[in-house]
Image 1 (cartoon, rainbow, N blue to C red):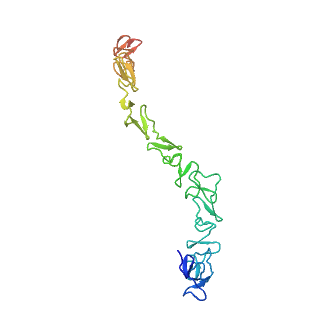
Image 2: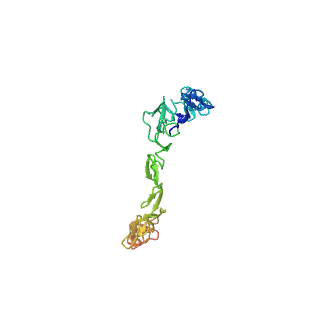
Image 3: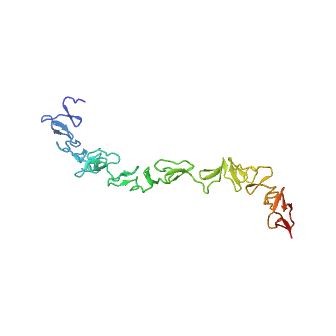
Length: 298
């Protein structure tokens, strides 16, 4: 912008020139050949040459001020209409508008990054007094924990921060000792069953009940010819039966003669052997009372 004839540029504005023959209008003073409004001029506040200093930022009715207040005290700066200590103010460190970066502090008018010994753990910050802090907790995290999102968490057990920040376990896992592990089943699952999220399962179904076992993904009884005592252990020979989880020949077994639990050699001692599924004493028929040394008595 070019000032027209009879005007001159002062403080970013074209103002009328003046001399002894050309006086200034009301409210203005002739300062260095220019008509200045000394009531609002920062360089000529109230009088020609009265320059407002760093403790103020404007001239109001001929008086230097900082915003709406009087001039700032010595050593302070007027920044944006407010007083600031340039020695310690992190937004105006050493000069107005000189803001310190994240994690820095203003020390003696210089933006400084504090140092901590030993170095702070991940997520923690080093404060101006040389101590580590996690967020607003006011101190470092204890052993076994991590600073995640400004808060201390137990990284040994926290499912969302297992062993470190942001390491999340799956829905079926637990954080144990800082490691994501499948949730254990207590008590332990039976043979053939699987543990899923702390629950025992047989195939896609629930855990097997007492007297049954998980065989090939299904719960089956273990007292059958096809699964006698163990999955897949089948009794053979035609005359075998499953008795108490064992395959026995009921044609010859003294303890299971003719059927499970039918014993010849019990308290009555009616026989000492099993022949063809029937108790026998000494090769003959069973005794009505007792069998001793291959003969009936009394």
